[in-house]
Length: 558
Image (tube, rainbow, N blue to C red; front, side, top):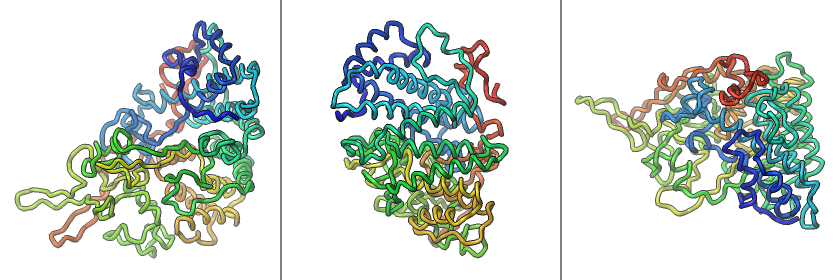
């Protein structure tokens, strides 16, 4: 198979010229160009590769790469009023600045359009031995399923397009399919993709150069994920146990491949070039420091960054258990509110920077003093009253490689992970617990993740409800800041219970004797709004304005 990089080259412009127009339009006069493209295997394969470019491919992707879905949740807050995050925090999902509503809707349909054009025309291509047409078809089917999965988790059932649209069709006034029909389309595409694609990245002709390529295992992982979503309370109000069983079986099928394993160190999960834990990634090696979301979004001025727009919350920090495996709310856990960072889950030290933590050669200083006799407050190096600095006394370590520092030309490796084996294990545990209760296989899957992190196994004798709580907590900690928490909250229908609760931070007071006093404080300026109807996004206003009535809005959105 010819090795092709996923890049936007001249010919791919043909496929995206509609980006300035409606996502369902066919460009006038494009048919002749398309026919020429698919008469040439090289151009046809490059056109197909362009479908990948519509994928979501990084963590800090909102508000011009200065926002994360984490800031929609209890994981973190936005120190600045970034448009995207601010409008979502206020429940204004229909606002034009809500790009995760508006931009993703059109972006996914443009990807679907590129896929449909490819699938409709690729049989006309005189493929040679350099190309594997079955692989190309499998990639397109996987990608179409992926694009629809991003839509279904936001909007529910959506308009289904499986053929290239003719520009003369009234394509922008079509009715939405049901959730079930949309799910069936996704599953149908994935089952075909699984049969056509190489099973793992190692089975591609050049695994290192093709690390982002779709595989049968990636299609299986997406299948397990969407089935879990379908079984969850948002889409399974009757708690049909059969749906949970399907989700469990889909995850178990990946486990039974015996092709994947957990990375030895949790700290390395996002920062290695290859791993048996990776099922599909978007490789992000060689990130520079300047001009990226790392320096422009995460890193405070005190460490040489432009600004720090994200602060992890105390809400999130409190989810990390003690190293003995007990929640900090357990009076026997040994948690000391005046030594709050001692003996915590090792993942806490991987994910969070806190007062006193050593980072890039010095201690983090997020303390302040009480006012002196003249009313003057002294601040530590990494906190002040400035806007672009932590409001919680925490910084995000997980997505900030230590090699990324001011004045250094060293590049940092930090991959965007679509699916990793730990998610398969936790998906299996969650689905099986709901289907059958806390059987031994549930314990085994959760304990494998915990023990990799250096945590003890779960205690025996948990009830189904207790296991559910432990699994949900485990997801929050294991996948912290990996673009997972928001979607979990939505599918669990836990927005009011989690997002709408007071956001909290830590106030660290440095005493005259250089000791510290720690006080948890509420942050009323960063309170978030979440009503029950917000578990589904609204169809973007621009799309609703085009319809004559065929396209229906989600309940609760006007």
